[in-house]
Image (cartoon, rainbow, N blue to C red; front, side, top):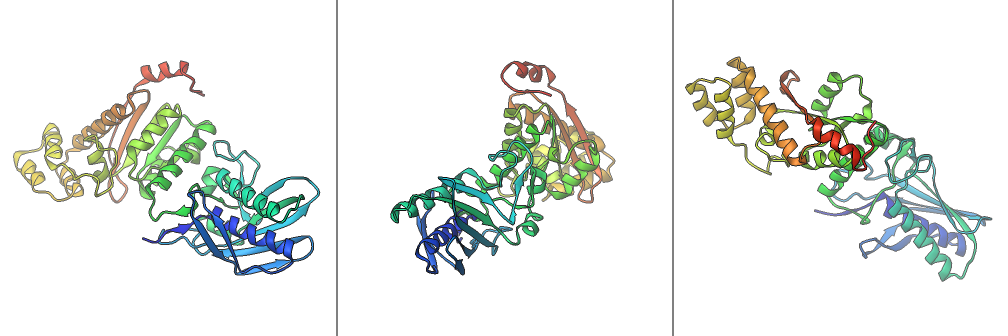
Length: 371
């Protein structure tokens, strides 16, 4: 699949074009930059304006084949001379401001991450050196539609207000990137902990997250995190950050796998073990005929429907207990784990809590901060 380029790369290309236009007093139609991964890429400049003291260049972000909310966004970098030595970087319209701790950018600053800041600073320094200029410059990155685009992201929950973030570590956007999703989960957990949350609700998707929010209305929005398929990764991050209680909310399909100790629950990661589900059903008192039906099942949802029809609510509670045990084994203890399984239409099927306060208390002496 076709790779795209990050908002950080686009902003850097625009910065280079704008600075050259300011120096040469000539419009620029393209800019070539070196990405953090070492690749040289030439970006088309769709607009370049300048006068004696300032210039700005505009590019259109190409997200490649990734379903990126910022694909097609206009990214503009304005460059102006400054009386202050050095290279100053800030965000303009459509670039968010950080309002909560836990992000890689301090509270109060524009949401331009460390690698894009380094890219912007490096390209500006290279251009100034090439032309032998020793003057201070100010770079301001703007995304005219950034505030609207940000509504499609988790920025508001992370405490980034007023627009999108300028992101990127490699310089390229990898389609459907596992690393990118995991990074967003880890960041959300960090922000929640920095905001004082000690109980987090991890969900597998939007519907399960809504159920968790209705279940725990007293928790702040930062406490609710969509972990997607990355159950083990999210649990491990919670343990590292000193979270005391985790509630996992999901449906039969994915949590049937978690109950067996499968911690990456994508549909292709591991098949559902219907023999295991039959054993759980047997523990819950299912008849031999019902067990035979489970053995012939093709989806976990069917098994769940069958258990509901039979009035075997103990099946779901047992499945939740198995999930809790597998989660604590994954994290090697140290947290209270609660599992909640819901139906496709949002009804509660089962719930169980496994407390591990002894190990959690022991963590208080190893550098974690607990509120």
